[in-house]
Amino acid sequence: MAISSSRRHFIKAGAATLAGAALARPSAFLRAAEPRFRISLAEWSFHKALKSGEMDHLDFAKRAKEHGILGVEYVNQFFGVKDDRLGLQPKDQAYLAEMKKRAADLGVTNVLIMCDNVGDLGNPDDAKRTAAVEGHYAWADAAKFLDCHSIRVNARSNAKLSSEEQAKFCIDGLRRLSEHVKSLGLGVIVENHGGWSSNGAWLAGVMKGVGLDNCGTLPDFGNFYMARKGPKYEEEKASFGTDPAFGEDDKGFFYDRYKGISDLMPFAKGVSAKSHDFNKAGEEVHTDFHKAMSLVKDAGYHGWVGIEYEGSGLSEPEGVTATKVLLDKVLAELG
Image 1 (cartoon, rainbow, N blue to C red):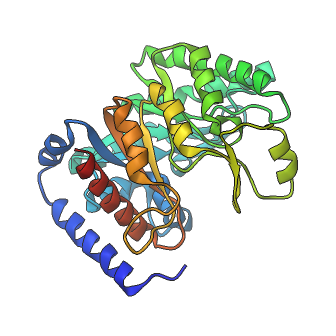
Image 2: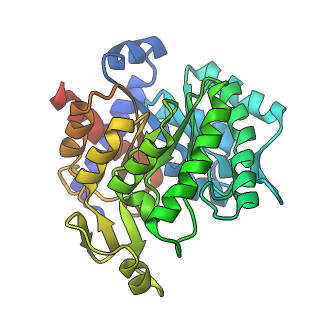
């Protein structure tokens, strides 16, 4: 979409403010945000630059600091290598040590690692589900080494199975993984990330089924689409049945995002402030950030709120800045 001159001015002004703030001592940021929320940055916000080679993964902490953000959420695909049985695995210890050093030198906290392409924790095949569980072990070790508090995983199974069967297999995989990483003092947190996992009530039921303190959720404001428009859309949509919380738009079939946030907040160990598009006033057009963050606050949550810009109307740096400016404003309003 075209960006108006007034919108560009808003973005540039926000960027200038953040750049100046980034020069302050890290401890000043942490003291200011400590009472309730701290803002982190999801690496996926720069996925285009990272995939094109324009940006190096090792510079991510630096980029976050340039935006006045002192917490980072890594994405495993930007520092992983493929293993035939275990899926994507971390690069070697020397590489992880360099990541840790760069973040520490900047006063940036490593918050979590988002893990994808490591196998389905709800795979109905016992051997494949076990491989998926074990495939996450090295990522948990990497998270521990980097001083992260959790790994983010997916509750994914075979979409052809019933919701109850998928839940059963996901509960088994998540419980086994959570039991393993508990000794590391880490959390296993599940994001609403497509399919049944984007149904807040279903994922809350999975959390209850796992029943472990270190297994929780990462509610994502913008990931409540259960099915996206595509060749098999009608078939996929029909598989979810009917529910008052369901809706449909030009992008696909979704679960009400505000109900979903409410469903998942009792188990939340992180929050993802997903953004796509903004109006001239700087508001996100798909999610009412004030309403969403009010639900987060009312749930009694204290911790990191991760910015994740995934739009195309602004450049990635502009999108991060716009989201940071909006989130700062909302948090100030909520007190």
